[in-house]
Image (cartoon, rainbow, N blue to C red; front, side, top):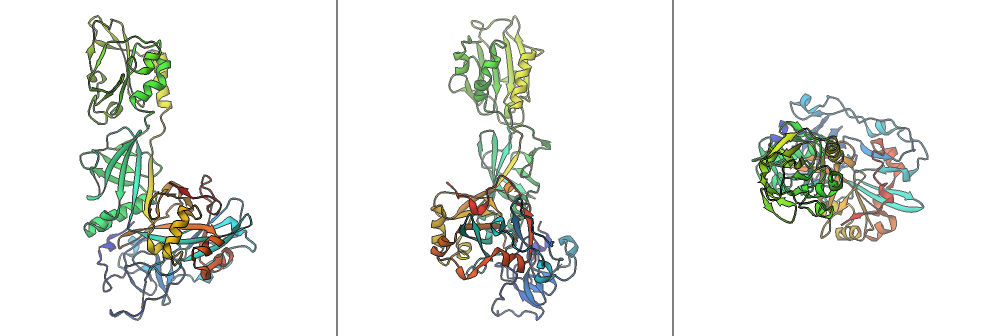
Length: 547
């Protein structure tokens, strides 16, 4: 996470360091001399627009680059993924840390010391004869193409089933990016379009709800760059944590307090959610109507959006159930389907009610009868009550018969666990594409034509229809700590483009910079991990995910 160092103005005079997460190619060329005088023991990093001046033995603002003996050097080892069954010998670890260029070295988590050289770290990292089609160089810690005109840090040749392939590997600096968060819950989170805050700053908004889920849009260029410096820093910090699968605290104006973490259950107003609803009230009626038939004379399924009434519903009619004479509050839509029976909230079925009888206006004495059996349940089965009408046609709570209790339990059984799903959404712009080819539109066209497969840290990326390369990826399918940042502020994310060597040459790729996997493993600092998600297709042997 970012520290207080990020409060420094991003100017040549005062930016020695700030802090962060990821890396790039071994050595980056120094910028040409500038008008601002720089101390002789410093190097200027041009891996991003901040242009840190870094003292020897220390790191720059993002901790991704350091000054090693007067040479600008990538700090973290690039992540290489090994296909299951391949076991080259590994030497290991990330280089010893550099001291930060600030007085808060301990807070930044760096130990003073010198970086090991590439030769020291990489020596003996891979056994001879490793199968290059079973090793994949990811964009994690690979570095960027800034100042935009350079080839990507790694352009890797491989062979898959006898076909020569090329994978272009880089880290994108994303100002135009956001996270779409899907929260599986019926709980009321807040009004649509409401601001979402993190540490008091607006970092996103509530967007349209989907079936059984509440949706949030977090981050984006307007929060990163369009507001105050504090808003940009807080937004970037929140996004970095969210993308790296950490827990993030959020508050919604006029709504709930949340703790959101990818792959975990959401915590809403201090309570951990358990279930995602099986369906709306109408759908629940349709699913379980036959199981209620003969055991209840009426069933009401309470739901914030569509409350279902069994005897009026088409499912009840098809079963030949007689009308119960029930009178519901709310706006009747179609038979057995009611809108707006209550306000949104954290009670029954995502409404604000605690008493289920509060949505019933009574029973028609010309139709109803004493002893009528009434079941009222929520769409998750977490709330359920059984009643029988007395002589005055008023519902009296009774012990629920075992057969109805079993169906209510089955509703819960059919509810999936409540989870937070975090999708990274970013636009891969011109500068990133220039690292692939001198004519970026050809890369864009090759993706649209399904000639180039796009992955993020090896995870399959969905490519949106329309212009540009707008990609979306599930962070749970990416390795841990895949994201970094630069204090411009912007998020840094890995991205890889895989295609045949012939196609790469046709789209004007940087053929002079193509390297073998063996050369990279022998000469570059790297860290090998096992292929982390068996559900992910191998990047060089899969087709693009297009709209």
